[in-house]
Image (cartoon, rainbow, N blue to C red; front, side, top):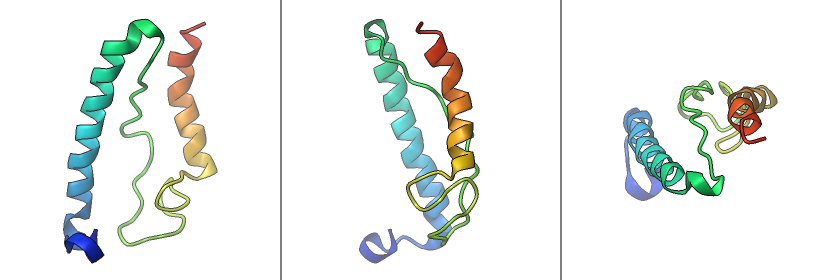
Length: 88
């Protein structure tokens, strides 16, 4: 975000919150639209602890900028378990 768009680090969390909110709305709408076709959307907002700004390694529930830690994956699995079990 900094190299290309020159967004100050102090604004990164707020920008991510806005973008994630937009993605969440899109995913919820798709889940509602295609739910009859066994497409489900699991709301995992707030499941993982945010990484500290400026980190590129393990921080919060994140292994790096993209992947959760093993503990983070276990938290996601708990969130997914109920909705997936409900399909069977």
